[in-house]
Image 1 (cartoon, one colour):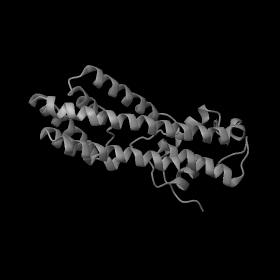
Image 2 (tube, one colour):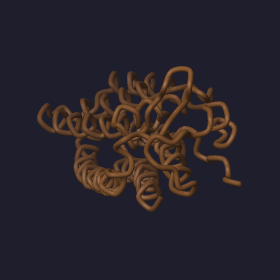
Image 3 (cartoon, rainbow, N blue to C red):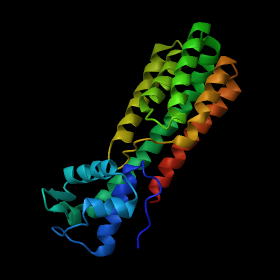
Image 4 (cartoon, rainbow, N blue to C red):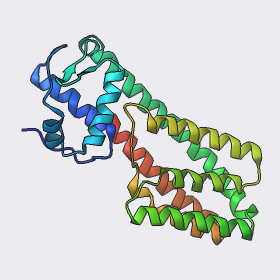
Length: 231
């Protein structure tokens, strides 16, 4: 009996589970998968998360949903399965490269921020931090608040070019988060408390503490991506 998924927020986990099920059961194109209700029970995920993963796989031709009949292995699955796995791995490797660039640039931008941020901006950053942490402790979706938090820090370096470059990199990362197979609904929970530590360090204008907190946030991103790469 297959074990339930532990990381229920990861759409890629559901996709991987379905891929493994098809492989383990020896299913071929046109053969039927268990009902969505059975899959939900097998994986331990919500129907919404399952439907999103199935919709994504259906859009690429790897699954076929027949109204009133169920979910079937798509025509492209057998011929593209190996290429699909390679493509997923390449996306994850590219993501790590982008994250590496972000780490280098954020190390420099924080030096600017701790010296250039105004008292008024510190107050605004505090408000954004409070909203983000309230969402975190309430276990509510917070992707928009997280993006606003980092974007505002970038703006506080008072260098439009640097801020624009980092915002662009964050935009590329957002595309990865939203795309298949790295469609992560609520990623990187372990790094969220360090956002508050980052704010406090900036408020104290302490670059060393700020970078340490930021590095902890980036470490969480790396761990999630590297974990996905070995699945």
